[in-house]
Length: 346
Image (cartoon, rainbow, N blue to C red; front, side):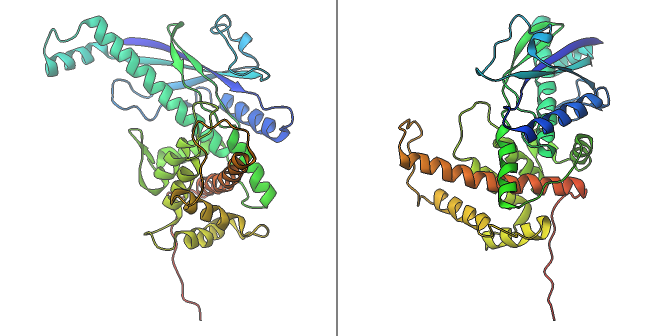
């Protein structure tokens, strides 16, 4: 049996001073992450080369406090401060069995021991990183925008292994702000442990794929979390894909289905009642080619381009708030999917 000692070092962007509520969310989230140290385990391995592995967490108040990256740390953006989540996993791998299985299926001489060992190490590292990404996704589902990661570092036996891609989520918090401004939807108080257990119990994610309507919505949310600061104007399509997966049946009257059913789940819209419907109209016009688009690489600071960016951003925030609030409602009420029935009234 071979033990692989893995550490992931994840720099977390500290919210800017003007966003007090986001800072509170982050502090709550990091406190709960620490409380789960050693109490959660890997759950989504792609194969059976190792069993469940407990995950341990350390929180550092600055990257300089983390010995592993102290000498190689480089901030991704000037003017920002960072905390660090360190993830520790000790993975026991039956390398002899893997080798025997490989020889039986492929024959001897196809690969050297060192080459096979390298493949196994890379597979294990990739799966641990994948597990942590799912964990961070659920953290940001229950506390939107709380854990936004810049490029991180992975270590094997305390030796640097490879970079970990960024996971920018700050815009999820801005969706919450948009919801507060529109007085709809409301969000729910949920802890990470319950959200993770909901994900496990209903098997929404299988081998990296979102299964069923809720799994598709979770996958759609993952596409809205970029690996760079560069915005993506197709985010609105992904968000609406997630909402339609949850709320709609067939392809008839999608807008009306969303308008009616979201109120049944998230409550009546008491103000700005037309904002959600206007967002869906904007999406339809955008996807059907009825809106003039800036070129992808346009860098001109013109009023027309600025207006387009502001409009698409506002619509994305509204839709994203509804998607996140719906997933929170489902976690809180332990629902695997949304089901609606029409009733005839006398």
